[in-house]
Image 1 (tube, rainbow, N blue to C red):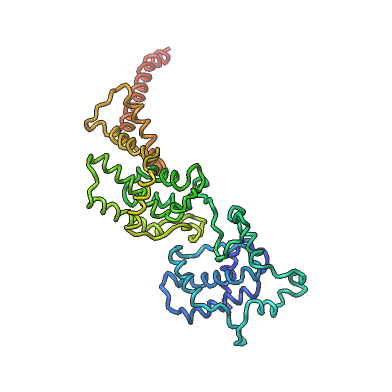
Image 2 (cartoon, rainbow, N blue to C red; image 1 turned 90 degrees about the vertical axis):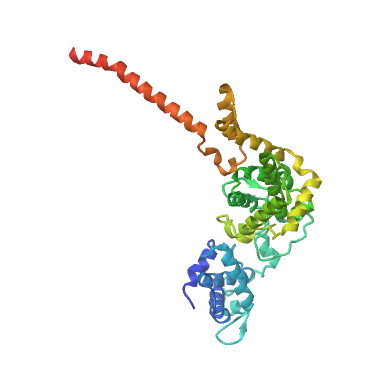
Length: 392
């Protein structure tokens, strides 16, 4: 038995306060040995996580039988690589492990042989809990259906109606929406539209902080995000360029958005959140899905609401910041107006409100010159007095 599996299993079950059950150790060791025969050739980055994945699979297969606490995986490789490795090993490794005797030993028979239910172990009178009883403690109350119908167990953490974002408040939107918008804006060099895109998603998919009951929206969140991003970006293009969007430009923008979305799952992650939980509600989309979603938004008039009207204000903000290039503004209210617009820019979600602007540089230089002049005046005014005191 590989002793390296002990710390691995403990890291997967950080809240387990007792000695690791012998059946769990044996199953993990058996799966690791079998994986070297059934999946002998792995990529270098996958080989690093072989033992970890085998231990994880063992925990998943015995979590109900052994009444294990919640499993908290933190694989030693990126989530995308680990997810594929785990799925591959879970598929090739047999459901039952083969012991030294050569016969097939199920987890329950191994537990009986190991004496885990003996007088020195657990209480003999305690009955084996059913699947629903074991999983009930891990389900949150909002996840239970209104008619008390038990949900189907998939072995994954239950889907929660609200996720806590990294550094953000609880939201009715899926956890991947906010970081995906940030990634898309950065990837497409359009960071200033991030706040507007997020406002559009919240208005359509989670009005008043609650998930909408619209079945189409809940079933097409990825396409909806692509459509909202496209509409905001195209409207910005029309306002700044002063011309309508032609077919070639439409295709280029749609292609760029799809490319950014396709790369999101490989680049977006939230510390402390399992990848399967993070991407709940996500689906891969194509060009026709984007076109259908854009048509759906326009058909329902969602682009006529307040979040979309702010794009014009965003363009005015940009024009106000380049006033030195030909835009004339009265000296009396130029500073207050530009600062007010800058504080309300659409990219404040991405912290660009702290960017140094030409106006701020000018204010700093004026402040610095004023301070230096005051220092010089003070030194000159105090100079003669100091000399008189010295002579006295």
